[in-house]
Length: 446
Image (cartoon, rainbow, N blue to C red):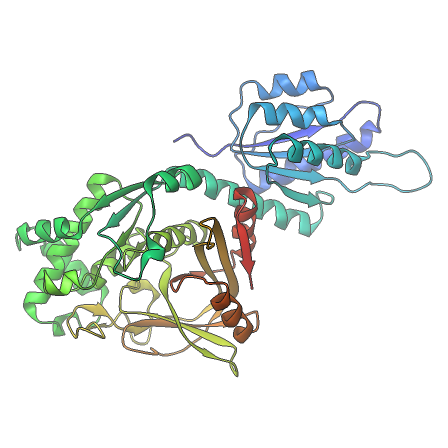
């Protein structure tokens, strides 16, 4: 896949105040290059449709920042729309001087013309930024838009695997390969859980020795798991690892219960934990959209992402606890306990992870969800991960939300949101909101 290419398109006409336009052009180039050195910028202002055409001819943009340096009519934006189908940020400059004299730029009127063309052409969604290059709000909005466009670009390089199908009653996690490709650009590959179980059974103890040693090094108390379960975990880990490597899998959603207890005798939880630490987001209960949410969170944060159910709220603390059976990445564990290994809370078979997660000063709760009519939507909430011990058998963390937690829970339940969420370290809601805008998704931000 070609590298992400953002393109700056500064348009105008020469009848306005060129010294003001020159100053804004230089400052805008500097800001955009500072936000992403990959930005393509023209050598000079684009003051005619012909100059715009010449500039665009060799380019294949993945993002266009369209800026009215001065007023320019809708023909400029129409030229963009005729050539490209990529995210657009429409950036209006603040009028530099109001002194009763001449109108220096008239960027705002140009923005109305450009936006009118965007909507009339194909009702294309776009981001809108207003302000001068030196304003902090402008920098923040542009950065969010650039990161969102890059994430949209990178999705086209993702190959996601569905290992088995969702259990009965968990259909919210199922995905169609054609739909994932057409909406997100993501390739979906499917394999039956029994195929990986059979591969695991065929792995020799010698061939899984490195997996056994790695799990022992990254966890605490693994030695307390019965020897046969430790060996069977290592074999399963090797089977999953080989599959991921051979098929170039970037994220996966794996069936877990009941198959790995009934047909294999050892849970897959700790295998998924190890994959999460290796940079392969892995969701359990075969939740494809959960795995997609995790992958997007990992791309933004550069760290493993927690995956779990909202299980408990505390109005007094304004907190929401997230939990799952035991597949969280070892690196998320509290330092005072480490990544403790225990047993699955229901089946009482190990190894499964059993720890509380480390505190973190900021967090984003995120879900790629579906409306009842099948259209896509995003759930977003921000807060912080508190310094809390393990809440229940399995892996857990406690998020103090910025929004009133009772209202958040009541509204999201009434809105029919799914029961699985990605909890991402850091504040990324602005970027994900920008992505929702680019993709035309409904946004529920709390």
